[in-house]
Length: 194
Image (cartoon, rainbow, N blue to C red; front, side, top):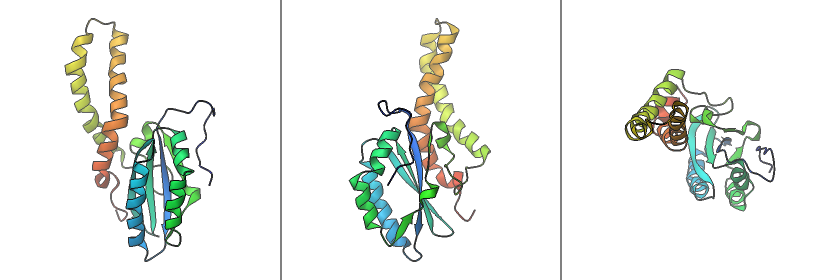
């Protein structure tokens, strides 16, 4: 069971978060069993070191389900993919569903705010991404301008300009956008029939 994550240097793991989409083909009539299994495996993943959560997307025609896993870095994802815990959960699903290996893909960085990797799940329309980003960025921009900017007024312009992205981008990437994407998931992605 080889993971699809490649690291540039084995001695120094990449500190960048990684998002992976796993696709599952469920046998017709076994969807209820599979959905029960997803609750258990999601609980197990959430307790695994480095996990930043898992979301399940509703099935497409053809009984395909998608799991979106987020980990702190590629090494922690690799640890999960090769773990005895994951192997045990895979054994429980035998005969009910199989993972579609050729559709597993990983991304790092901000593209995972909205776009799910692979061709099986479409990204939301751009206008929805813009509106959602505005909903996440505006309150933070307001807070930075109100709380941080007055204290940096005497600083040189390049230094003042650097404060804004240094504060805003990590908060958006790790806290606000994952939460907004989760809360607005149905609006952003719609249902498989849309």
